Amino acid sequence: MLKRHKSGYIGCILFMYTAILCGQDQQSADSLISVYNSGSYNSSPYKLLNEISKEETNPQIAIKYAKMHSKLAHQNSNYFELHRALLNIGNANYFSGNYTMALKSYLESLDHANKTEDLIGQATLHISIADTYMMLEDKKNTFIYYEKGIKLLRKTEDEYNLASALFNSGDWDIENRKYDQALLKFEESKAIFEKLDYPLGMAYNIGNIGVIYAENGQNKLAEQIINESIAILEDYEDYYAISDYLTSLAEISNARSDYVKAIDYAKQSLDLATQYELLEQISISNLKLSNYYENIGDTKTSLHHHKEYYKYRDSILNLDAVRNTAEMQRKFDVAQEQDKTIISEQKRKTERMALWSTLGVLFLIGVLAYGLFKKNKFVRKTNKIIAFEKDRSDKLLLNILPEETAQELKDKGRVVAKQFPSATVLFSDFKGFTSYAENLSPEQLVQTIDYYFSKFDLIMEKYGLEKIKTIGDAYMAVGGLSYDNVDQAKEMVLAAKEMNEFVAQAKNDDTTTATFDIRIGINTGPVVAGVVGTKKFAYDIWGDTVNIASRMESNSEPGRINISEHTYEIIKHDFDCEYRGEIAVKNRGDLKMYFLNA
Image (cartoon, rainbow, N blue to C red; front, top):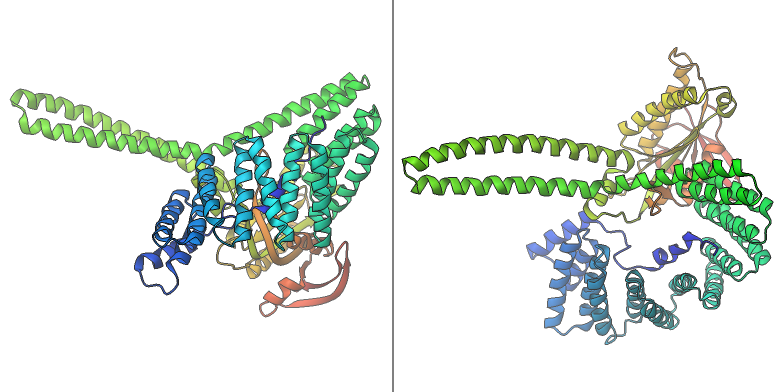
């Protein structure tokens, strides 16, 4: 059976607007708790308790305040507030993976919501219940509650969430091979997204429609439709989805014994996955190529791709070690507490023996004291090892993720994507790097890149900015991924100037023979940030802001820093800038650009 496009799961992420997927804010929660405990607040206690439950990132604390909310609402027979309190309890349990308790709270919340006129709330709960039944692998109830939720949404004017719910339900239909049902839902969802002018939602619907046609053996039509989806996804640079759909096209060609075309599509998928370091897709593409080359009798090439498949599969599996870091730290903490308990208990026993013992018992106390000394010495040594391992695991996480995200992973075992209203994104690359790299050995190439990128990393750290990733000679960083809504545009411009100066000075440095000119582009605006994939463990940012920052870099000049109009409006009073006019940009029309002068 053809592999279904994984990006179809975004429907669940797009639709669920419960606290599970909303941007929680611990700082805000702490402030609200302080206000509530003081008793000096003017707003309704219902509102305050509801906000605390939604903002609190610790599920147990969220449940505590949601129960207080529920108790107060129950005393006053307020069904609307009971519904909201129980919804928050369900969300907190869902967030912590306790799906059985989450389902219980959702069903109780629905019972109270049905006594109110909150139609949107009722629809939300039906979809949340369906999602929970899906996690519990209860197919029958998953179908029932998706259908009920969709029926309620049709009575509202909330078209976006109706389209997303239809997409979720259709994705679940594909999972259970109910292709006719899924096709109808995707067609309707696509039409709504088209009306709302949401191309990405249209692209995923189109792609999954193509997958359904392929499942039904309509390979030619499936190929045409999936190519339409890829064309849209290319504009949004959604390379994981494109790579996955290219694999689907390869399978379609393979199914009709067109092995040459199957190999061509699989190679395109592999090239794209390699360029953007998509480990899972690299592994899958190599496995497909191994099978296709075996079909045409080229066993040597088939063996090569099979080896590559295992190599990258092992790389993906190794990422599990990183995921287990948070669990390892918790075990360290538990072990430390156990040691303290043992010592405390032993001390109490020693004191009792001292009160009631004779001279002979005192001798035994002396022996025990010596043993306790040895125990304490062992505990201190153990604690040093624990502290060292904890520090090492902390550094490992911080080398991969921003500090707030690393802490969230340690506390909860997962990371929720967050939206930042104003962040500043930087892209850079080197002029002439490709031709220069062709004449270098792999070792020299890595040394050259490391010479520049190590300095760039230090510069980003100096200004409190986050390096996101490198792709070949391209370097990407961002500022403003914090809860204080500061875009850090000024710091990013200062960092860009230091990068430019360092590259210029490197031409006179004897430590490297690689002398380049650098192009830099900067843009400011809203982004979404989080950890991508369930196996591809990497922190990344998305949004139109990122795409425009990339366009600023590609339209810059060697040795110059090109900034967008959005960034210019923020830093124009602090830096000397030169207006370049409106410049045509691919898929964006004419954009105003400015050069940053020395």
